[in-house]
Structures are given as C-alpha cells and as structure tokens.
Image (cartoon, rainbow, N blue to C red; front, top):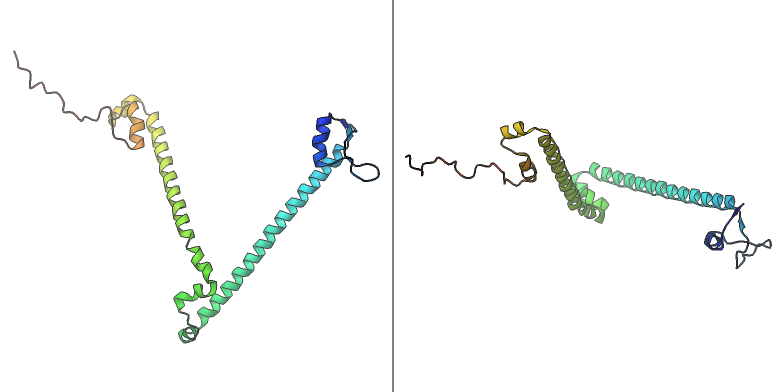
Length: 184
C-alpha cells in the first residue's frame, strides 16, 4: 500500500473511483490506501485488449481487401477470356475491361498519379540536396592550394554549392596591363 495526498487521490479517482464494501462508488475518496497493483493490472489489461482489437481490425480489413481483389481479378480474367464479339454484346471493349469491372474505382486511382508525381519530385529534390551537401563537404575538406587549383576560395564554396556564381576570383574584370601608364 502507498499513501497519497488528497490531490493524488482525486486524480486517481478519475481513473478508478473508490468503491465501498457494499460495491457502490464513494463520492469522496477519504482513504489514503489505494491498491496500485490492481489499478496497474487493469490498465495493462485495457491496453492489451485495445491492442488486440486494433490488430483484429487490421487483419479483418486486410482479409476483406484481399477477397475484393481476388473477386475483381477473377472478373477481369473472365472478361479477357471472352471473344471480341462477346465483349461487344456487353458493350465493353478490351481496353475498357478494367473500368467495366472496377467502375468508379478506376477513375479514383487516377487521382493518385499527381500525388505520386509530387512524391517523385520531392525525392529528386532530396537527392539533389544530398549531392550538394556531399559536394560541399568534399570541397570543405580540400586545402587552400587544392581549392585554388580549381579556381575557388573557401568563401566561394557556399555560393557555388547553392547555385550562385558570385566567386571571389571569377576574373570578371580584365587584368591590368598597365597600358595607360606611360613609360618614363
């Protein structure tokens, strides 16, 4: 048994109200002894039951989807086995078999294509970012001589890797040839 303050008892009463010997809930929890083992065991049991229900729901949903998929595939196979004349009697073309079986479900799957395209673009951007990051680290690992050999300074690395071409030694201006100065 553990002793609790009145506030602790009120908090615990929200989860497991005190019960009198007659079995009716007490309005005021005035005893300082609460059987924590029972409360913890009840919480573990409730959590276990909830997890069991969740797994059972997932399994039953999966079974239903598999059964629906098999039924759809069987119908598609049966229609594909028919001749073109039999299909025309049903007003179905070979290219239309899947839509004829799935109906609006086939149209709904086309809404997924933009989402998949967006995910693909995001994947490409992440790959680009990783390549830039790897290049940045490789350039930062070089010493000043190696950087000057490829025409960079340490200050240029961030600009180059971000796509900006403002280099410190980009040689935008022509070199001074001293042609303006007269020889004396």
